[in-house]
Image (cartoon, rainbow, N blue to C red; front, top):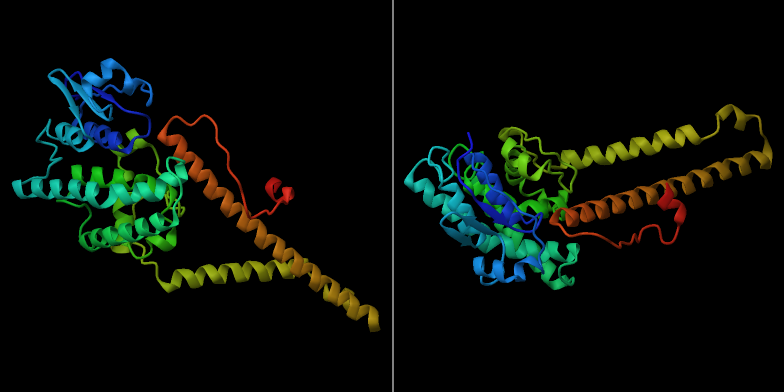
Length: 329
């Protein structure tokens, strides 16, 4: 049953710092209205500046007044009900929840932004900043992975505010930049994240989350979390090799046709199919590269659209190198 309270959350669409509050509200059965809001316009109005003097979002408007700052808003909604244990089941667990909320703010939000924002067009790309962000995130995920080795959730035995805030801080990174090689050392983090975003309360707010590496929101059991071992890589190589051999066998002319030929004509005809097979293989390899690059660009555009305010976009594909036929394939 929904908690009877009249509240409004002012934010732009796709703001992960607001999504965390809406997910908490789902767990607590709290109804929160989200009015249409345009950054750069509504946040500069005199009426809004009375609610948030710095013009920042999210802002929660309650019957008693307004609350600014994302973490404060999320904590407020989480504490509206004690029986859902959004702050854990004990006083100590409440402290742990606060610890992970601060962890997200201090260790994740800045480096994730430095890595993701250039892709979304919010800031200019800077190779040095991106490299530093990747190192900082890897260090933070290492801490999380060790903690989650024997745990399903960050605190206690169920979802708490800690899981909601940290997963929202990592949401755009998982969708836009965390590929399989980067995540390979952190299988427990991947298992935890997919477990969280597959929950009904998460789905109701953020929908189905598609990871950049191609994983779905379905959560595997903790014991079978992906290990990123050599077996997977060998299997992938073997699959490509088998597919190539099958393709070559299919395209090669029957042996009996070659046997009918003689002398110089036979040798020439053997060379021609070999050259054709090599060209076809190179073309297929290039096409796969183009499709992969195009898929990544599509995910980036989708992520930008989820952030809100996207009306037009311009993108480029480098792999085709001017070959329009590859774009139409």
